[in-house]
Length: 359
Image (cartoon, rainbow, N blue to C red; front, side, top):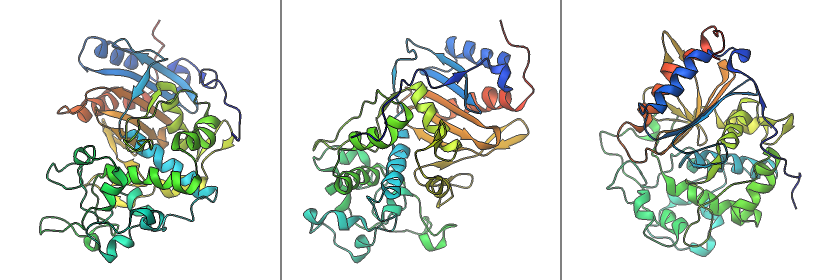
C-alpha cells in the first residue's frame, strides 16, 4: 500500500519566465537555437529550475514533455536514494552491512577470499569495493559488457576475484579518502538485489511507494535483468520534468513540496566526498561531485551522469537544477558536449544579471 496517493506530475512544478528567477533569457534562447541548428547533435531536452521554479524547458529531435528519456547511469544515483530510504525506514541496518550476508543462497562464491566477506553496502555505493570490476577497462573481468552475457548478474558480481594494484594504480590506503574508485555497474545492480531481499518488494514497487509516488512520478519504465530484477545500474526511463524533480529533491535536503522523502542526514552523507575519481572530481554515494568553470568562476555541483552525455546537475550555490538529456551513446566527446552547454550557456545565464526577456 502506498504511503501517499500519486499526484499529477504535470501540475506540481511552478513555472515562470527565465528573467523572473534571474536567468539570462537571451543566452538561453541562443543555446536553444544552437541545438536546433545541429551544433549539439542528439541533445533531446534541456530543463532548468531555479529556487523551485521551472524556468526553461526545451525539447528537440521530436522529443516533447511526455517523452521518456533514457539517461542511462543516472539510474545509479536513484538506486542510492532507494538504499537511503531503505535505511531510513529500517529495512537495512546501515551502510556497513556486508553484502555477502544477503546472499546465503549464492554461497559458495567463486574466488573465495575473506576480504570479499567484508565488502559493504558502502563499498558499492562509493564504487570502491575490492572486486576486480571496472567498466572503463574492456579487459576487466567485471566489465559490464561481460555481465550482460550471463543470466545472474548478482552472482556474476559476487564471483569476481579481488583486484590487484599494480604500480601505476593508487592503493586504497594511499588514496585521499582511503578508497580506490572504479566505475562498476555490477555492484549497483547487486544493490538492487539487496533491496528486493530486505524489503520483500520488487524495486519498482518499492520505488513507487517511497520515492516516485511522493514525487508525483507516475510513468517510470524500468529495464530488467534476465532473472527479472529491475536493472538498477542504468536504463530507467523518466520524463524530463520528473528527472528534474530528483535533482530538486537533493537541492532541498531530501524534501519535495515541503515533505521529507529522503532524510536530510542521508542527503548530507550521500553528497560528501567518499572517493576520488581524479584530480578535479570526487564521488559520494553514487553522486559525482564535479566542479564546472564558467568564465572566471567555478561552481560546485552534485551530478547524476549517464552514457550519452546525460546529466542531472545540482548547483547549490546558484539554487539551480539542470537536466540535459542526450542520446549520444558510446560516442567520443559525449560528456564534453553537454559540459559545454553548461559552461558556455547555462551557468553564465544563471550567474550574470538577467537581461530583458526575449519575446
